[in-house]
Image 1 (cartoon, helix red, strand yellow):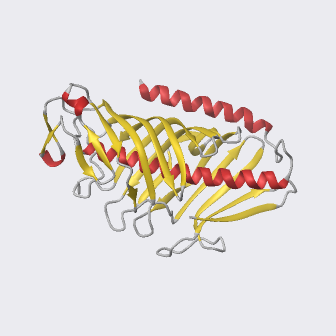
Image 2 (tube, rainbow, N blue to C red; image 1 turned 90 degrees about the vertical axis):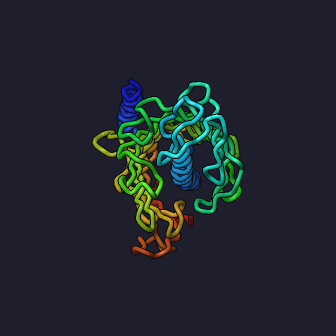
Image 3 (cartoon, rainbow, N blue to C red; image 1 turned 120 degrees about the vertical axis):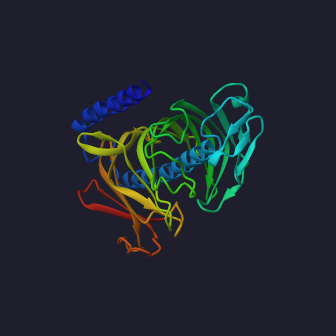
Amino acid sequence: MKKAVLTTGIACFAILFLVIGCKKNSSLSTTDEATLSTQVSQNAVDQTTIENDNDAIATDATKATETVPGFNSSNKVTGLFGSPADSTKDSLSCPWFVIDRSPIAKGFRRMVLRYRGMFETDRNILKRGRITLQLVNGTKWTDVGAVILETDSVAVTRNGNTRIYQGTRYLTNVSGGYFNLKDTAHNPFVFTMHANGSVTFEDGTVRTYWIARRNTFSKAVPYTFTTNGDTTVNASLCTMGGTTRFGKTFLVQSPQAISSSTQFGYAKPTQGVRILNYNGVEPVTIVYGVNALGNQVASGVLPFGYKITWTKLSGQTGEKIISY
């Protein structure tokens, strides 16, 4: 039933995009190159930031669930590999968050992840707030097809800038198993993410969005994490849609999956392409994993950042290279 609701929501955005697409032109209401360039660049930065932040939050949620995959209601519940876990106590399973299991002890298939406000070196971020996790489908999270309902209220700080995320998402276990490297029977680990939410930036502007993504984690060195779209709109694989901080409706196509690993850090993808479609603006292309000249780096080479290209009001091609 919930899947049907999500699919319907995405379909509504698809219809909205069809209407917008008929009106698309190469000019903004402000009709000046400087404003176009500024908004294009900011939207590209927002897209990259939100992709990274959502990956980090969803990864924490799945890791937390693995401590008590069955959400059992007894005082002594079963953790990973059959080890006993006390449902009445917090879990210190991860350095940057604790898991409040008290709802489980009261008979609910629900837990609360609470961030400890500690810096995470692998993603170069700090998270504060909480995530409520509820098993809504399946006997335990490690089963194929199991679904977690996740409710977020999380502040993410990176490079001194803080964003506040609020919303709900459904995580579906596609492969079975879990992130843990000891789970060699399920490699790679695959899960989908379908969400509706908003992010509030430091200047008070807000971006609303829906997300439809398919994530894959390889348990072989260098532990590659890949994310792609998980819905089709106008015959194109898409990953996100909604309204930008500038009030323009957008849709994000995913022609190539974004890929990153522990080699350079998960916040520095080595490849991937996103095409951003906005109301009133020609499509903007983001290519991840480029050098300072904007060329795709070879395998094993540290990327400088990502390149964005767009059509200027003059009809010429605009280009900007942004560092990670």
